Image (cartoon, rainbow, N blue to C red):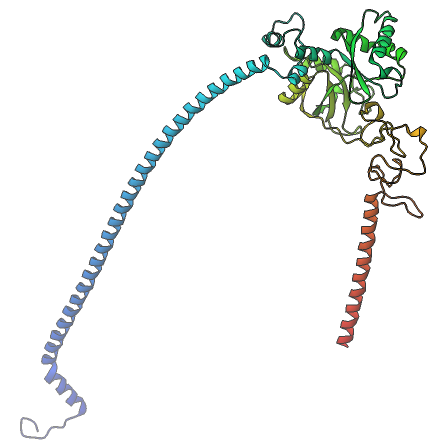
Length: 457
């Protein structure tokens, strides 16, 4: 009903509008209050979260600062320790340097004393290997040697004996070598029969353990003159052989070919005739005479290399030792490395003692037969039916290849075909064995393939 007492039609739309109109103000107030409360709660929660983050950030900053302080303190402590260690090591190094300098001074003094003592108290070997000084030399070493070894002492006599002696091989001499008096008189008569050696005489003869003897002259000059004119020895004792003078070889590497080779011949082996004299001039010093007696080229003849190796024989051991200690030698404007010359093992057969490793001219052993090993010459052997090798003591002669010392040694003599050395025989057997193994492996492979084909079928 409406206000005039009549009836009013109410629709759903109007009912909604009335309800909204009737509740709009209280609802708005309530909504404002609710909204205000929510914003306050959000602000409060946001402030709480921010406070926690700030607190965590502060704690992290404090931790970083404490860690930085600790690291800084640790680094400062390490730097102090390192500085102290460096200072201590510096002091230690200074002490060691002072000690080393003092020891070096003492070592020089001791070395000087040892050198003086060595010159004043040298052994027989040192005195023997020392290069003789000229008569007019006034060096300190010569003066010390003269004071240490006065004339007439046993050592001086032994030195003079070795310096004034010629060694003679008397293996083939039969009569004169039995009596040294007869031998000396015979040789002295032969010396006087030649004008060049008429004023030379042999003082005495010193026999060696082997078939050789030393002919001792009065001086080194007499010895050299007798060696230069050996006709007196051939006339008195035709079977005797004068042993050559001992030289001292030194190997030289990286020698320039243009400095030593004869360019006119250009065969890769012939050296110039003036190499020895030039070597002496270029390598001798005030105290060392580097006189060279012989030189030989070692490298291959037809080689495209510009350098090679050679061996040079020096007259005195002092010169050889000087070059070895120095480590190099001069050949014109080029240099070469020096080292000890190690000669290869000789496979030559000596027909005096019938052993391998040397020749008859250098033999110092007793005469032995090459067939029966008895002390007589091989040509006069009467026991050829019962051979005994003087080298290996087996039942064959020294000339048999079954001897294990023979250069072409074989284990046994084959029934037919050429004889093979052991190395070639072993290589041949190894090749045959490898060929057999290869054939067996191929047969096995073929059998495996056939078995697999049958299994597949």
